[in-house]
Image 1 (cartoon, rainbow, N blue to C red):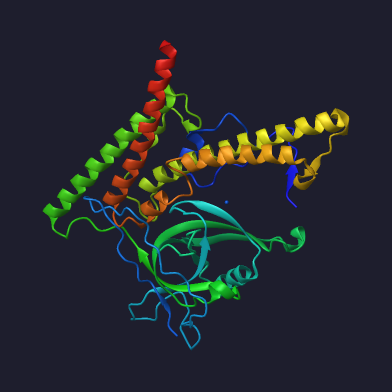
Image 2 (image 1 turned 180 degrees about the horizontal axis):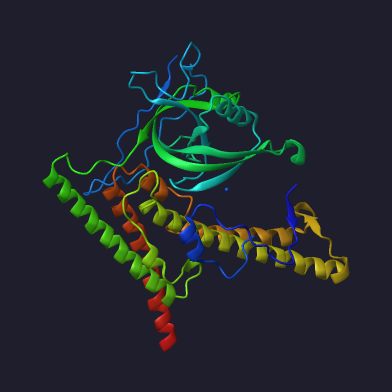
Length: 393
């Protein structure tokens, strides 16, 4: 049965690990305390693109079919590197999750499912310490074609402390992007007997030009113009955030630290700015969730105080033990906040970040991200105009 914890006060969560350290330090937190018989070959059709060649839809793999014959049924090389002298994709474990992860970020995962316990044992035994994380479509169960590689930095065995409910607590760094070429054992997704494995190809942004100095210089000039445009859009957004008293928002001085250049293995570049943007949106969602929890707790407390008196209020109550009228009120509160979340044009868990991840070039990613920032600026501009109108009245 569902249980509602009666919170006398809300508790803050740990700072987000998704944002880079410099932006995480500069993020102004919400004032409220914050309380998700063949191998399966990728056959994606090209998603629609705009006039700039920017993908407007996520590339999804075909659905994983139950009963498909696995390529791993026979003798197959499943090491994570191609044989010497052979130009072949890597074979890596696949861990589908419901959100999009970004390069140059760090994440903690709690591992409890038997198949993923086995996966961690395997990547430790073979020394690779790597696996692919890709977004899963909640409506169709399809996997995104583009994913990221998690590198296992640290693993703690916690089965004794958790009664074996959780086996490992694992720390990871996201080290690269990959394209899934084919899933080798699609049947495992339905039997859940083991984890998925796939052939993947590591992705890098398209190189500048065609190797000619003049063409290369022209492409870099185009990128620099796009970087300047994004920087200007961020500057406009920061001013609007301050004028609208938006929370959460970026702090003063963020623009000076903003880097939107090319990324590599050691340099965050544009991915650092995207990670900070993701953290900001996530804080917004968490702020709404905190407000919802506060309203739910307040409504339950009102009923219990009236029913039992202040001194007899229990620490916890089951949802099914509440009167129908109170349960209806709670449902309405949840629906109200769910509607607010659904109405968000941009969210941290939507497909927008997956489009950024699958963008084939730095220039395309700059165009996409600038549109996201401009859309948020347009929302705040309308809010500021409305605020000015009311101030005059």
